[in-house]
Amino acid sequence: MRSPRRRLARRSGKRVFDQFDEPSSKGLFGIGKNNGTAHTPIDGFPAPEALEITPRAVKAGDTWFRTLAIVGWPREVSAGWLQPLLSWRGAADIALYFEPLANDTAARHLQKQRARFSASLAKSGVNDPMTEVAATDAEDIARAIARGESRLFRLGLYITLRADSLEALDAETYKVKVLCSSLLLDARPTTYRALEGWLTTLPLGADQIKLRRTFDTKAGADCFPFATGEMVGHPSGILFGRGVSRTRTEATGGGGSPVFVDRFALPNHNMLILASSGAGKSYTAKALTGRSALQGDEVLIVDPDDEYVRLTQALGGEVIREPTQQPKEDSRVVCYALGETDESRLHEAVGQALGSVWQRVDKGPVRRRQVVVDEAYLMLRENPEASYLLWALIKRSRKRLCGLTIITQDLADVLSTTLGESIINNASIHLLLRQTEKAIDGIGSAFGLSEGERSFLVAAPQGQGLLLVAGERAALKVVTSPLEHGLCVTDPASQLVAANR
Ligand SMILES: Nc1ncnc2c1ncn2[C@@H]1O[C@H](COP(=O)(O)OP(=O)(O)O)[C@@H](O)[C@H]1O
Ligand SMILES: [Mg+2]
Image 1 (cartoon, rainbow, N blue to C red):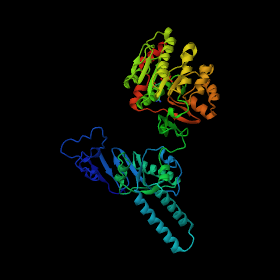
Image 2: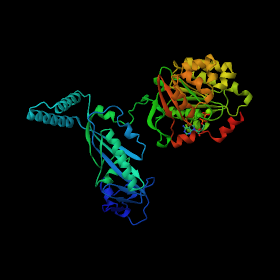
Image 3: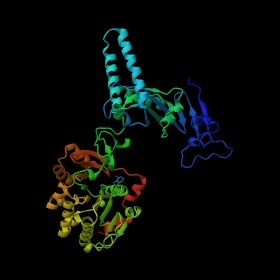
Image 4: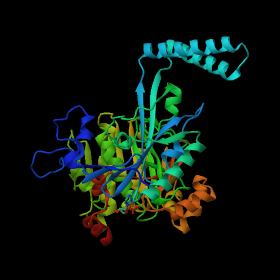
């Protein structure tokens, strides 16, 4: 028989907000508001119709929730040890709470612990290795804290599982408990505190359960969600995408850690994006360009298909149609949009735009600057002058704090020229998105790709590929926010321009 359930409808929602400081506020999730008028959830806040609470689960809307709290922890942890749990493929919300302990509290805490250890060692009179080790550990930590090298944290870890029915929830619970056991974690349902458990894993930052364990800085850092064996990147960088684990499937969202890259932290600041048509080269370049511009970098774009116009406008930049025209002094985002240029003049126009960019890079003040040249092969092939300018830009860019992004779909074009070779050799960042069967062998040997990497690239969906940064490599999925996505997709107007070419 199931235990009796309490029903918590909006009218009787008191219990929820009793726990928060402001009972007079509208109430979280729109429940608990009872002023006689029709209930409207707080604008923008999702609000369940009613909550049904049982000892071990909460039902909100049609979904059952159960929270597990971690009550047993392993003795030792290493970097990224929580990753199997954090990237679990099921429907789970995981909350990790870190609360720093004041140093004097920590010292008192440790002193007590050490006293306990020495008492127990003295009492037993025999050598108990476990207690001895623990006592030594406590001493080490106390010393590290005294030296200011470490701190203590109270850490809580909670997992809320979701399912459509109680039976499914039980099944999920079992699976997660097994997974936790494999990590030496003891996960227990927050019995009779199901609602508190659920609230604890909502993105509110309010730990209602407070089942915590003390960690020092290092052990705490090892629990950090993004500490994995994947590419480390640079903390000062912009988001390039998320790591893709090739053992995980698309259905689970790939789930990898965010990868940040700062091109100005690398020996040269250039990037080569190489992929077949439609693989997402321009999309990626737009996303990265937008993020760099928001970070304060100056961005100059040579855009044969008017693809970057919307992005430039959204960033408050300057769109220039006349390739010989210099941008305004204070423009930070500049797009040479050549989509209206007559086909027969296009190569010349690209060369001229590149000349204007060169002027700005070479003669203007030195500042963090990026130059984006989409579909570079247009120039490599037909316009020796433009090729020379590109080569000069690549060579000079580092001294001028300038990073080039060169986008092309044809490695043969790139490799067959000395310019192409110098592009590859002078780019610290190579992003390879989907490749054709025909191209993969050339790419594979040029970049030293393994069989697995080659087949990954041939089958890669839009926006996924390999990122090679200064000797490191990672499978990457380029991710965008909805706002970015709207600015990065190829809009019909620029598609038309491209189709007419
Ligand atoms: N990372 C991504 N996420 C979502 N959609 C993408 C992504 N990359 C590419 N696309 C889709 O693919 C289309 C073609 O991408 P695009 O960058 O124009 O290809 P190309 O490699 O030819 O420059 C985009 O308009 C967009 O709809
Ligand atoms: Mg493109």
